[in-house]
Length: 154
Image (cartoon, rainbow, N blue to C red):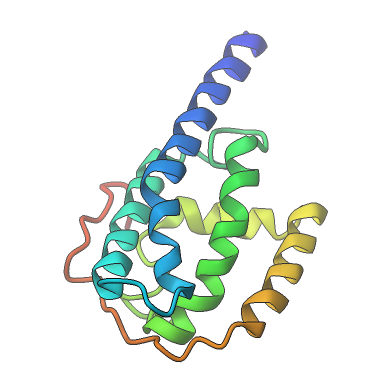
């Protein structure tokens, strides 16, 4: 039974990695590239893709009970989003625009990852990198009005 669970979690992890590579990673340059075409549309689409990630996550980690390649792949990306979207694109905490608003699985996963030493180290390093960026093209991009909220979100 344990092997079946491990295999199923690995399949979910691969699907989550595909979701990232195909739908999230191509949108990330909208955050840091100064000459990005239609930045606001890309940020809105990023919000929709985070909703897809929320639905696909199974918890407590992204693909199941244990840390997988999906966690390792997506955590650095979420660190960048966590530090840039509120400050430069108006996704303020405790509002309907917050990165984890109506995304309880991603929020729980984010909090759990903070207790993993390698993830904490990555988060610290990425914070330094993000703070070194001089993003002066940020503009508020509200997304709450376009989101399709997951059924499991309270």
